[in-house]
Length: 274
Length: 217
Image 1 (cartoon, rainbow over the protein chains, first blue to last red):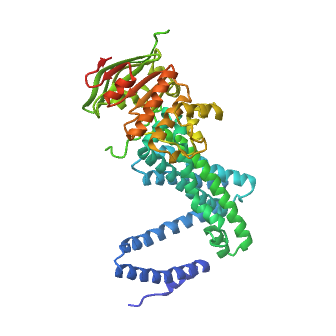
Image 2: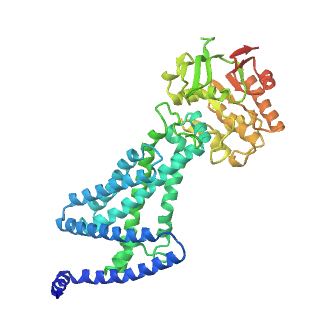
């Protein structure tokens, strides 16, 4: 029996050249993955299974996402783009709630804040002409803005809750002096927003000298002028900071309802309670 | 109106699950009266103070402040009328000035440094500078700042939770001396929770024992 290889050859030829090149790189990178698996096995670093599963699952997910993006880009419809961003924000809110599953009411607070903050910033940026209303810009930039907003949301809720458990006396001292629920925890809110922004502020300060962030690197690899890429990176940082601050302020105010009741009594259980 | 009760608790009970902390507790504090509340550790003395300022809700019973049920009070107004000074005085980040005005500025009011220095004098901290870092103070100084922080707000009553229990003897005497002066100078109701009956006798006109809810003079 003779196998007809011309069928495979025809299929391969039907794939665009740029994807052929990418698949070739991917295949070579798998050699690096094998080397990584050997090293981790040898050093008893227990990440082997997760690396294999992650590679398979991640590859399928990201290819599917790539195909969806191609479809969305081709639609060239701004409402569809913002629909995708809203879906991403809902997923980010769900992820925040999953990561903080021991804290009640996180989704109730993270959903509206992650929709209000990043989507508003993206909409304003598009309206002002800072971001071109095309999918190639709106979706990746929106993804970065939403991703950073999610980090802030997680940090703010986690800090507010854990501080309420650890520093009950200080919060009740504030309440006993007639403070509102926000006034009783405003220092915690400020600190968590500041520390959530710190990694990006560091990258911002060392921009171009120590770090070339993802978007700028991507644009340069994609053939953009490095100066254009750099300016775009600054724009994205400003959008990230604005969205993060909005999310931090909104989520903290909504989440106060989970920490205090109508009588302004702290309802967070102490750390030792079951 | 002269005999208006500042604080009145009737048949107050506190349960935590099946555990009964106290039941049928009654308490009346009149204007300008200094009352001691004593009881063994864990009997619920501090809980009663927290109930009075509505930081927690009792399992049952009625609490009336200046003739009005706590449920009818705005919690923030209630806590500016009766100020609780907790057992372990917590300082907010910042200076002595920041701490003294903490409650006041959060209700949109202000006070000048002369008035603040006068209050520092009242709590015998004349040597202290308003710009000193509040977090570096000793336990006794923090306790006196906490009392001063409450006095700045001109409350109708002070609720003091074990004001000297966490302090060494010297600091405790200093706080007692401050309390004596406050009682003399300020015509306000004071409820002092203490496990130290001698201390309660030194300050108060009336002592209520939580164990059996009995009064002694």
